[in-house]
Length: 340
Image (cartoon, rainbow, N blue to C red; front, side, top):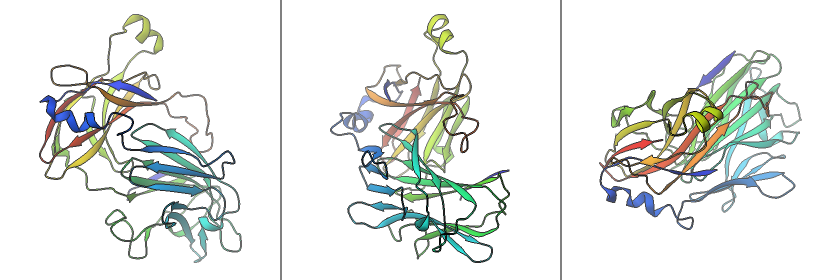
């Protein structure tokens, strides 16, 4: 029973209006000027990992006390807890066993880090019968998260909670005055899982759906509130053989127009394959309105099915083909783009 609750590189081509509209985007393309984003272990011991972003630098401790904290200030940005139906509090701080990470997506614009084998325990060392998959959705200027608790036994919980920051640095409306966001789960049955998502840093209200016009798409543009990106879909048919030998010039196309509101913003677009031959994307291209390619790096993310790297957390080994790119929008600016 699955429950979800809300609340590397390639050249790309896009379509837009005047060439000057792209100057802010072009200015970010040289490596020295591109907003920073990287995720890695801190050293070969693999007892901690770090997220190095333009707007933050965090370290995640994979041994007790397990937590995510700011390198410069030492302030804790995130740890998790679960309160049982009997009032007993289990915390990530007291976890006995080491945890680990797996990067499902990694590139210059978006990294999706899965912090796996997360446990919560009482101060006395009693563990809740839960295994956690804490996903961190990282951008250079913001960070979102979700926790999926997998039950290994039947377990009743009063709440599951994320403890983070208080004040302007935290996403508005997420954490309370104590720096906590709480969710009320259904009773956990052995073998079930429940997911809870929350913004952690830098998230702002997204553009309204009416800001987008779908010009060519199998799945129209929509905002992914869990991952923090705008997603549009096309459909691929045929595998590597067909694309290479039979129809090498066939492209998956997704075209749209966006009209920004009065707030300057950077938005992140995910062009995904909605079905058919997933896992075989080789590159991406962005075109302007006249069909000319733009000198913008596009991130490629994909997964082949069948390798079963995470049999417990992702038994289906879900395949996907995605490209990612940012758009830097001035107040009331309009763009028209085509992504291949």
